[in-house]
Length: 98
Image 1 (cartoon, rainbow, N blue to C red):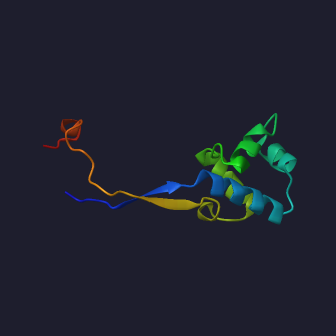
Image 2 (tube, rainbow, N blue to C red; image 1 turned 90 degrees about the horizontal axis):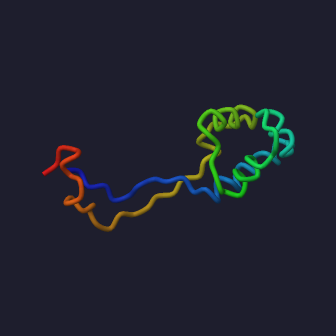
């Protein structure tokens, strides 16, 4: 069995700040993005920028396109260290363990 010591996750707050920074660097307003995505209201974009939600996969791809950056330059990752192996007693039979 392989034991992983770290698990990558997306830092929502840092990603939101990054979306806002990239948008401003391109000289785009929230209204510009709202119109680009065809949203009736700008709330989704504000939620992205505040780190409350992430864009869907399709919207993330489109965001990279309009900001002219790869998706990897939009998302901010961090790793969570795992100090102990997961408890094997819970549901291990589901995956063919034990």
